[in-house]
Image 1 (cartoon, rainbow over the protein chains, first blue to last red):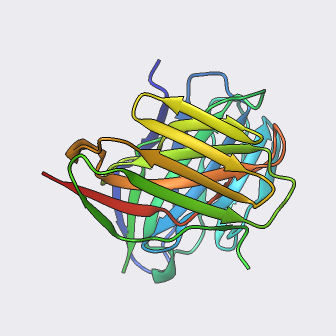
Image 2: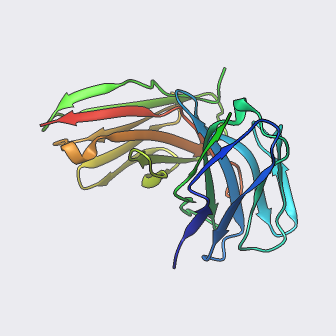
Length: 113
Length: 111
């Protein structure tokens, strides 16, 4: 199993540009999430999904869109990038049953100029 | 008030020391408590998991949950330089509930 994979690893955008951060998992997990991590702020939940076709907002959803057309994929879209979105983005997944572990991807480091 | 409070440190200790990391929380519905370890430029990985109150031990690591005080702890015995990382507490109320994270405590163990 590859676990949770994220692409790209690094990205530099200009203000106003759009892009999609890709996330995929091969563990057949129902529950997937996107977090951003900023110095001193810990992990903040952006959006999450409890299954294909179902998404919901987390703590800091503004400026981001998600969709979940398959169990495996959970892309995060930045519609019009802003410098405040400079951060490290982590995708995570878990099975959603019992005492399950949440697996994190390696992260995407995004800089918006 | 944030759901989960965690002192960000940094914490610096000599090799062999006992390390104590703590979090407090406000939501009495939390039942599942976790500690994640995050090395620099890596994603977090689960270190310890506890359901409800009590202690759990795994090698040099012990996790404690005191639901009456809304307080959780992680103890590291005989700390090693390889334990240098950021430690994040996390918790949730139900099986499908979202995870709430602390800000993380940065730990350095020097030889």
